[in-house]
Length: 225
Image (cartoon, rainbow, N blue to C red; front, side):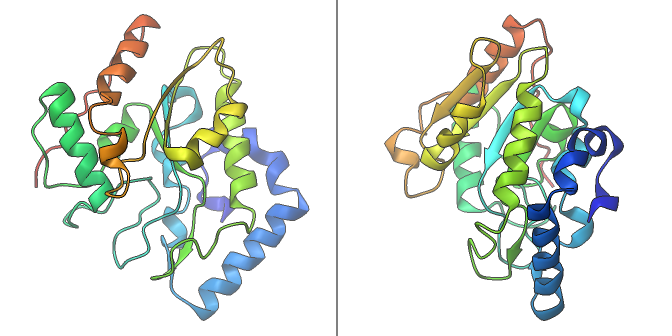
């Protein structure tokens, strides 16, 4: 797996790879791949880190578990491959984006343009067995992605951490709010979007925080296919 990680992150996370928990995790995922279909494909597991080098991270958006249906997950939280219909949480994100900033709702669920502008689209768990949500939970990924969050927290310049839902908000203890900004609300999933996600204006809040830090705003438009 490690060969798929970019140098800027390899250098920062080298200590994690040498720890017993990560070796056990790697063995677990390798075994899963021999016996089951696992998403995303191995080459895409670290795409969040590949598309957003450490020095470029301005925003960290935390997801939970990769999509577990065919051809969806490609290593960026909430994002799906081009041509795949945006799943419900992402569709709700697009609705809020339209309400918040007037950006037209896209039929394209591929969020690579966000990642390329410095939005680290990180899931807490980076693999999943096909059609079995949370099947790779508590196998070690959380410890690894907590280390990623800690490294982003160590950045000297301010970063905007986006924590949607109770699971993500538990990670706020890893973030130094005297230097960084947290934008949080309910999760955009259909179960909770009407209980505090809709109307929370996260996209304009992120851009306000970036502007206040003297950084360029994110252009949230995703071109239609």
